[in-house]
Length: 260
Length: 260
Image 1 (cartoon, chains in turn brown, red):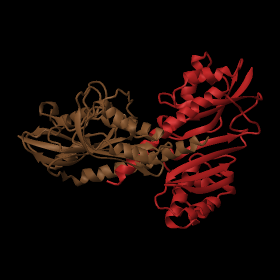
Image 2 (cartoon, rainbow over the protein chains, first blue to last red):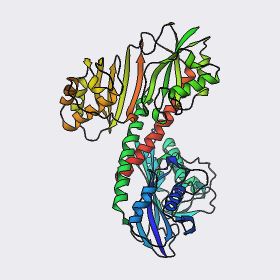
Image 3 (cartoon, rainbow over the protein chains, first blue to last red):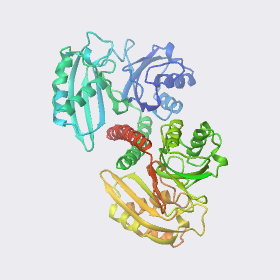
Image 4 (cartoon, chains in turn yellow, green):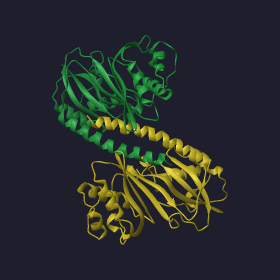
């Protein structure tokens, strides 16, 4: 028996999240179906994932692991041939028998993209940087109390008409990144970074999670590197380029329509 | 009996084009269903549209007309309440009994948005301007020979990372705008506007229509103005703003992923 970990990219808007649910399309569900076509019942193979993502959220480097009788890098190609166009496996690693992609992760890196709707970007960045360090994030989480996490990087940058929030930490609670983004937007709108301190210090401030479409789980990092599967990576890059063109067009269409 | 014309906006990516086809979602099909819920069989009411658009193409100001027993602006609200979120009627006009939205149109205005993938924009604009005037466009059309149309405006402008092609003419043949865009891309890539002249002069150059997602039928113009239905217009503006945010995010997500 071999335990193998895989790096997984997916575009999330067609899925009800990554975690398996019967009767609705999920990323896990598509993976289970693809493995089934290869004669492998993933669910009976200690299938584990590094991070659960919500409906609409995309990933470049989520990770899952399962036990296999044999493994050859060719399996990645076969797996991709059975997966839909918006899910691509692009790297792998044979790991220790007790490997758990969630527990063994050293850090998670997320990015969140949003339209700059007149925010004060410096204030947002200042507010973002207040999150660096070890804090109780229960005010930014759902059903997590206490909720101590350590954040290594947290910053906001302007990129043309868009703002990008980058956050890396040891672990994230449910809805945490999207609730942080909502707090940063409030900070940027009110030109006051204070809201972050208030939430961190335990004040009850309701934060509706920001729209999922802007969120990417960019990477889950371990104490080792993965082997890239070149065909999978090439396919992923083509799919990214195609979607980039399409969404640039739809964004442009709505920018034109917004002037109306 | 009253003949009434309506201005119609729709986001095209969920539809197999505007023209009615059984068994697949079309813009006409949704309109027929909405009228049906109001007890009106649109197909028996001399239903006509100004412009047929392909699958994926959006419109801000397409026009349809039909005969009604009575008309009150309130009908627009009822109609919108029966239409899906990506189709909105926002203006109307009681017209002459013999009004035909296609035949009576004075001009059509289209815009096409594309990603600037390193094109020579000046050359593209030069090539675009060669189309102004009366020409036989059969080389840019499908099943239209001869295919004389008059173009009033044809220009390419840069807008950040995007390019916008604007074209207004008396009428357009099937696939014409998207084939012109393909020719303009070739001109911009090869830094030579010549291809436009060659196609216009009858040389057989195969032109695959450019992706439909960037195309908007922005307006169909007549010798009269429409009355705006304020509630419909407000709804349309909200829907545009919401989609603008969403597609700005998805565009940003893929811009980030493109760096990978």
